[in-house]
Image (tube, rainbow, N blue to C red; front, side, top):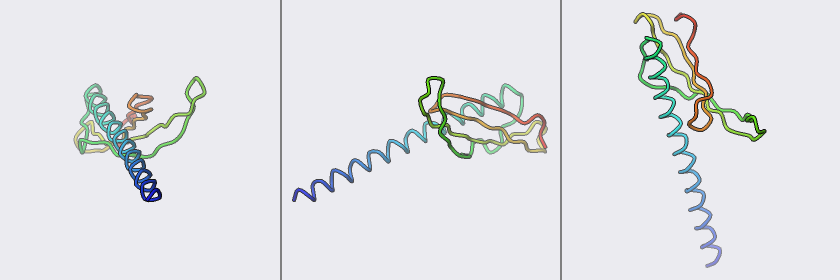
Length: 106
């Protein structure tokens, strides 16, 4: 009986951790979408597909030497309605680390 209870607690804890990871990733993606829209609007270009794509993540150290997870997202935009260019967003949590647009669409 104790083994079954322990297994149930471990499964519940695993599900809780998985939910938290999923929720944090979803919040980061929503932030990246908002930043992409604001960046395109500010640069007078059109955001294509109305969404960002997850490009990867990596660990980096902050100025205090602590490790943090950086997520990179990409998005497509157009300045003339014909040619596509790609921008990028780097987030630490939901906080913007870097954003960039290509020099000229190609």
